[in-house]
Length: 386
Image 1: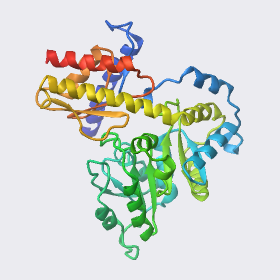
Image 2: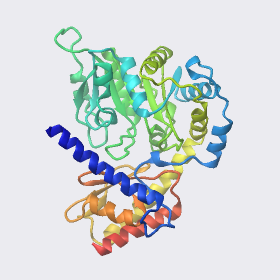
Image 3: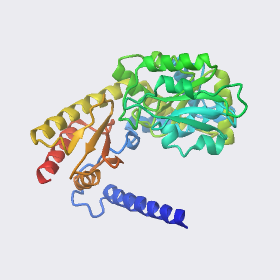
Image 4: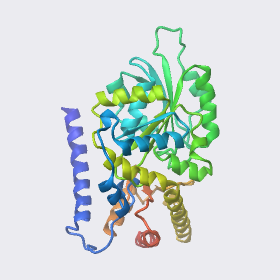
């Protein structure tokens, strides 16, 4: 009964939030009804451009379960080559891609090593345990998104000890979402791979926003992922496609992932209508990401200058970490995330309460230069009134 009450309370809170957002999008009861809604909650909210819609309508399709969808095949082949891997698999979401990777690398009763703030562990329902019968050794993530290398090595089980599960996989993330969209340098993955190789285990990269990391680190995506065995990348986040993610790795690994995908109900039919816009978004992805990063830098600079001018950095400030397409605001003392978000909603700006002290805002290709100026102005209005 106690669990039911908690669930009901959380569901009601979520429902009220969804209704308030729906009102904004349908302009019901909104005094600013003619203004654009600036949605910074995530880069998943992007809408397909006219080029994407045309490509979707004209895509060459077939039954992907029979490997007969030419648009899907082209996407998988190009992504695999781009990242320097043997094969690729188009999947409906990043969560599915990560789950398939874990299940393909592991077997029931085995164990993964993962950071406590990584998306795979924190925000994917523990699906590796539910569907794969796989346990996790959960290590503390450092503020820069890494795990301590000594702790990683010490977490690997003794393969000769029949009391323990067998370690099969180390999971890593780039950019690191919960730490603030931080790009993790290649050296970290090189060191992780050395540990994995010494113990004959694999490395999987949750690279939902890997192109953001590559642009920020000024390194080719292929070079950035060369030390991991498999990579998942989202098309529907920073790249701006409507749906889908790609999983790449060895042919044997992808064949196994494809088999598992079918069992989970993830087999596509005429998926080319989604693969085609994903390929379009992928091919212009680096340029899209660069523009987003430029706007983030302008926004960060504007907010920092304004917070300093009003001598309010003890109450609200930008998290001082390397930025990609993500901005984290830290709220303390009398200013709370809820108060800021409520005010922004009144100005047709949506942001996400990341935790009890932090707000997340993500810039994406539906946000333009005028929007950035408007966001800064609204924050200044908020500060002067609070």
